Amino acid sequence: MIDVNFKLLFTLQILHKYYFTDQVCNDFSITSATATNTVASGHRLVVRQYNNQLYVGTQFINTQPPPPPNQDLPLVPIEQGLQMTFYMWLNNPLFFNYTNLPSSYDTTKIYYFTNRNNNNISGLNFLSAPKVNLLYNSANSYLPGDIAANGAGMIFSAIAPSNSGSPHGLGDAAFWVQVDDNAYASSADILQWRLSTSTYNFQSVQTSAAITVKGYDSVTNDYTLSVLSTTVTFNNPVLSFPLNLTSLTPGKYLLTINADPPQWIYINDELNTSRPFGVIDIFNEASPTSTNLVDINGYILSPAYTIYFMNRATKWKYIISSGNSYKITDGAHVYTFTTVASTATSATPIPLSNQPLDMNVNINNIPIAVPSADPQRLATVGDSYVYSEIYLNY
Image (cartoon, rainbow, N blue to C red; front, side, top):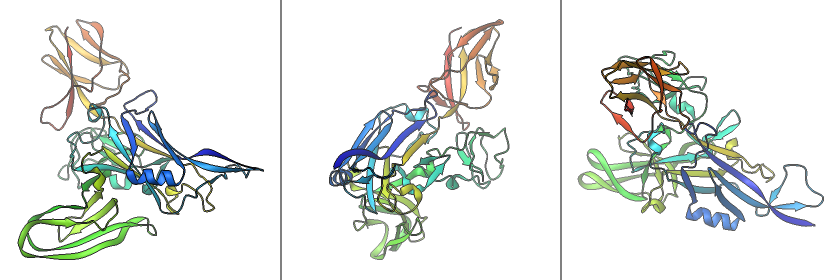
């Protein structure tokens, strides 16, 4: 006897450090690409989002007597090379205010997450870029909020600016604060979005364009496979030309033209009229391990994937109208404030959270509870820091 039931092929959760209690991030809607709808139909897959999680289920064969535990075969085999693409649509306009990502997000770029990154930490399969892309480099410039990793994979957040002329290593507590070892979404996950036919702008006039495009090599598990190599000669020197990449399937590539710096690009013409926040590519491949949706015998593995966002840290500036003497105190005695005229500003950035901190203003030796920073109100004053202003009518 054979019964047909459903089992999870994989799951995906979106977490955010801003949401203190459970870190569940419900700020996104996730939809399937047109090609993925076809894949789901042909493979008897069911795709559903519930709150912060995406569930992809597959029909499987339940034989009698039953097979050993965790050895369920999909009704339609999941073949090597299968690809599913999903789009992340941002629903919360305040997301960038409380998220440690560039707030001046370039709409010509897109965040890209994939299980090809093989970013497994403490049992979680992160879809963000590996932390090797974030290793601290004393030759780089770092602004408050920038993150860097040490050789052991620990993440640090900059709390003061530094650069090659005045480098400060991750061990300098006046410039860096240790976060944890999670793999957070970062600028390393941003790609330049391009149509398959687009205008390429040179940095100076050129007489020809030597075009090289490298794609993903499933043998090396890296973008080392040459998928396009051609030269276009112009009749006259030009500053731009029509770049034709129609021979490439939608996905991530490394593009190099002449001596211009190589750039990571994402090609997908389906996004021409509407641009999501990010793209998620899930593959079933023999390697790396993170791309194993089924084992070598075709049995369902049901991996769980994670995209994790870090909360933004800002300097909190309390603005007090009263002329009385006052000071701001942190009930946990972690943060200190400096007072100038009618303002009290935190000495270092404080991470934003939907869980209020125990903050008090002491006016004429009388402590009064005051609100924590609200992500709706951010300000910059030209000193590299982002400020949260809190007005107090005392």
